[in-house]
Structures are given as C-alpha cells and as structure tokens.
Length: 293
Ligand code: ADP
Ligand code: MG
Image (cartoon, rainbow, N blue to C red; front, side):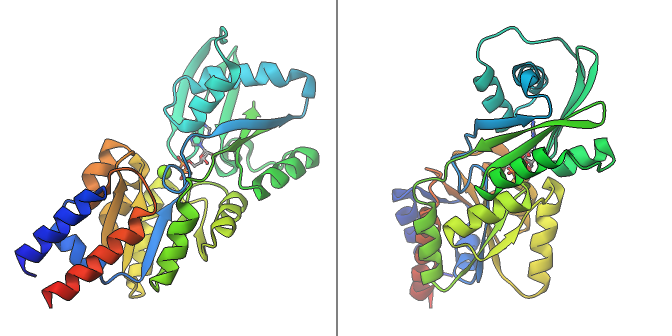
C-alpha cells in the first residue's frame, strides 16, 4: 500500500466524519463480504422509552414501576434511564444488595422483596424458567413482534410483570442497509435483545441474518465462528459490550457517539454515529485499493 494513497483516503474520510485510525484497516475494509451491526445505539437511537407494561396485578402497576426504578438507579443501561424518566421526580423506595448484570438486567432487594429485572434469559435463572402467566406471555409476544424490547420483573422467583420499551431506528439505518446490499455485501444483526424483537427490527430494515440473545462475551465468539467459515467481517458497534467484537472483526467500526471503550477499540470511527457512513467507508476503501494497485 502506498502511504500517500492511504493518507489521501484518510483525509477524504475525515471530511465526511469517517476517522480511519489504522491504515491497514482501510485495506481490509475493501475485502469484507459481510457487515455485522449491533442493534441498540448503532442502528437504533439507543434512547429507549417505556411505552407500555403489563402486570399480573394491574392495580399495582405504579407501585412495581417505582420499585423497578429504585433498582435501576444503580444501572447505567439505557433501559434504566428510560424507567427513571418514566416515573419522574418522585421519592423511590429503599434498596439493598443491588447488583447490575451486564447484558442481562439487575437484581436486588426493594422494601425487603427480592427482585430481578431484565431479559427473559436473565430472569429465567431466577424463576427456574417458570413460565409467566399466559396473559402476560401473550402480551409480551405481541409487543416483541413490534420490535420492542421486553424487560421482565420477577419478585421472589415469580414473574409479576413485563415492560415494553421502544427505541426508534436512526433515520439513515434503512438506507445504509440498502446501500450495503447494492455494494454486494451481506448484512447481519447481532444483539442481546430477544429473538422476536431483533427479528422484527431486522425485517423492517431488510437485514437477512440475525443472531439474538447474544451475551456480551459471546458477540466476539459469533464473529469468530463466521470467520472460521472464511467470511471477512466488518463489525459496527457502540457499546462497552461491543469492544471484544470490534477487536475480533476484520474491521472494527465504532460509533463516535458510543462509549470510550468502543471508540478506542475501533479501527474506524464514525464521528457522527451515522450508519450511512458505513457504505461510504466501504466505497472509500474500495476506491483506495484501486489507487494502490
Ligand atoms: P443490547 O445488545 O441490545 O445493547 P444488552 O446486551 O445491554 O443489550 O442487554 C441485553 C438485554 O438485557 C436487554 O435487551 C434487556 O432486556 C436486558 N437488560 C440489560 N441490562 C438491563 C437493565 N439494567 N435493566 C433491565 N434490563 C436490562
Ligand atoms: Mg449498542
């Protein structure tokens, strides 16, 4: 590779908010066959809002929301922020032994009651996979089919409610996927969220490949498996959880709006957090390769 061609490409990238931190990554980016996206904060705005909730004792909805919000004060997950925003500036009940579990949820005691709040997979370990009431389950499935993220609430091992959060897509996500397809690339979606929710989001964006319910430490492993099949991958992500996958991918692309750890791990940083910059970066990489040869 000629250093001059790479310098020119790096300069051109910077003009459109594409920061190339490692020149060699640009060469690899010209050779990828698949772009793997993280969902939350990458293709979605990453600012979920509580849209609805369903409880086995409907009269107690507000009380449960306050208890859950009290627990979530200890979490930095966007879901926690959404809950605190939903309950507003009110006094929250006292908590004890609160323990956030990255990629799963949070547990602790509120007013002496043992609570677990999080993904189905996470709360299943608290309930011994005891099925929620059929009404709750049906409500949850309908919400997930709309692409909403479900967060279950379990008290003393019993599912008592489920909350649905909506996280709007970024305005350019669909166009980015269309363009990547036009460049001949496959597009995949990798998320810790539940299968049904992730599939709904993938369908709305015309993404053909989905891996859902992936724990943070498993994201890099999924990429490793695909690479073992000979695939060359770019991974696009924003979270602390995404750092191992960003490092594992042939090209790690970090959202500049994401966490510091992700940004430091990325080979390429999209300063504006705009998914449309991904196909732009691929085109830049391909044009640079032609210059070099
Ligand atoms: P994503 O891959 O969508 O960014 P995470 O890996 O951070 O999601 O979390 C996976 C799932 O675990 C979330 O969709 C949510 O259901 C649940 N979860 C994680 N942290 C929390 C929390 N603090 N409160 C409630 N649910 C949580
Ligand atoms: Mg994310």
